[in-house]
Image (cartoon, rainbow, N blue to C red):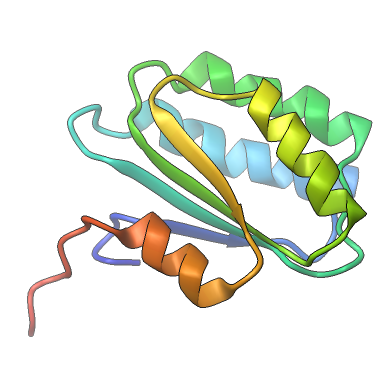
Length: 124
C-alpha cells in the first residue's frame, strides 16, 4: 500500500501454520527494509476468534533479531475483548526501540495513525 510504504496483514486465525507463514513473510521484509525509510505495518487481527498463543509469543522474538535499526509504526487492529487487554500488556513488554506500537479498535483510526507522514503515491 502507499507505493510499498505500508504493509497490511490480515489474520483469520493464529494457528501454527499462520504464525509460521507470517514470520516467514515479514522477517525478510524487515531485514531488507531500507533503514532510511520508515517501516509501517498494520495488522488486522479483529476477528474475535484471534488469540495470543504461547507459540505466537515465542515466534515474535524472531522479529527482534532482524529489525535492528528500523524506525516506524506498527498498528494492531483488534476486537474489544479480554484478549486485546492481554495483548496490550504483551506489547508493552516487547517494545522495539525504533518502532512505535499501538492497538486500535477502529480500522480508520488505525490506518490514519500508521499512515501518518507517509507521502501518497504520485498520481498517474
